[in-house]
Image (spheres, rainbow, N blue to C red):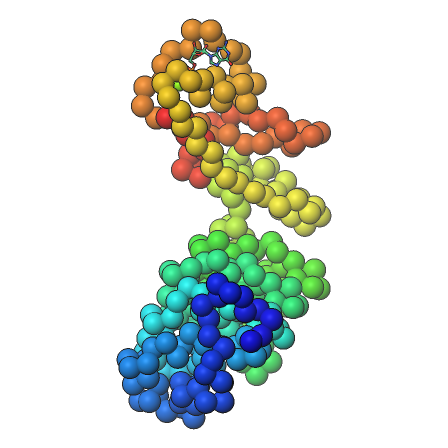
Length: 295
Ligand SMILES: Nc1nc2c(ncn2[C@@H]2O[C@H](COP(=O)(O)OP(=O)(O)OP(=O)(O)O)[C@@H](O)[C@H]2O)c(=O)[nH]1
Ligand SMILES: [Mg+2]
């Protein structure tokens, strides 16, 4: 048993890796055998070796698309949450390294829990997707597909790696040799602008160019992480929900507060006052994103 095993960890360290038929078939690129094993002994996919590597990780570099996707369909969420012990990388790091875009999408549809997991170099899957790799370069379409998809599933474009570089910094450093030479710099700028825009929270965008500039400056120089969450107030009629929310927003107490009809959503944001504890109401922003709900 390795150190990451625990009593409620269903993952098997047996059969020993060297006797694992599935791994053997992957390593020898015997894809018909892999298909057969997935059908008849699917449990073999839920195994790992002493380095925390799974058969799925082994398959990423060379398995045909249908085999890789079949493995992803068969695997459990625990399988996608394995990390290698030496590099700290996850299946998502592996998939973006080899630009296995549709397989990456299938994993994300099952779980996005490791979307911002950093490996021992501090790199998230988004870092790895946009970084230049010696001897393995990605096309513009691959960069675009992977990065947009990762950001849509919650990847942060502002996490810094061990060299204090964000995924976009690594993209700047990437020579993108695979891009067509005549349009390379234009394409890079286009994608960079798009990714930057996608990573700006909607409530900042709604407050106009000055807020966007302040947000970008703060990201360059500051260290504050933007966090958002949704609060829901549930309680019996007349128990004081509306009054509580009003108090949080610094509004005046009304002894004769009318009963709330149905559901009320209020969008709020936390001000950047001295102690960060003053809440103010924010109107005219996308209320789906940041709201509290009173029932
Ligand atoms: N004395 C006192 N009265 C309160 C307090 N909170 C609420 N109230 C009163 O209790 C009544 C109900 O409060 P609301 O805030 O409207 O309660 P609610 O849960 O939103 O009620 P519904 O919307 O009808 O479900 C109002 O008359 C409030 O003035 C409190 O902390 N102290
Ligand atoms: Mg109410």
